[in-house]
Image 1 (tube, rainbow, N blue to C red):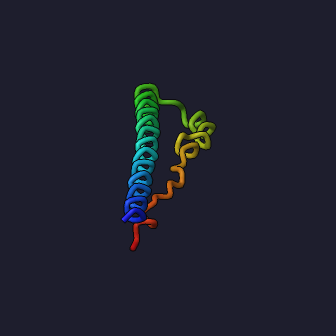
Image 2 (image 1 turned 135 degrees about the vertical axis):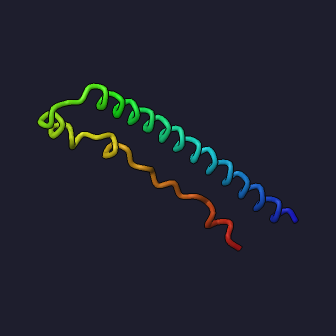
Length: 79
């Protein structure tokens, strides 16, 4: 029984850690989406010339943002 209780406790701790990680990733995504929305708003309210747009094409926020590889502990739950 003791080992089973310890295993359960470890699994619960892993789930809590994963929930925290997912929460942080969601906060990052929310911030990015707000920045992109501001970017779109500025672009459509103050459109730039085609030449200016080509210069900034390679510097988009999409390239900066990469979803980190969040490895969930779901594999450890398999029985």
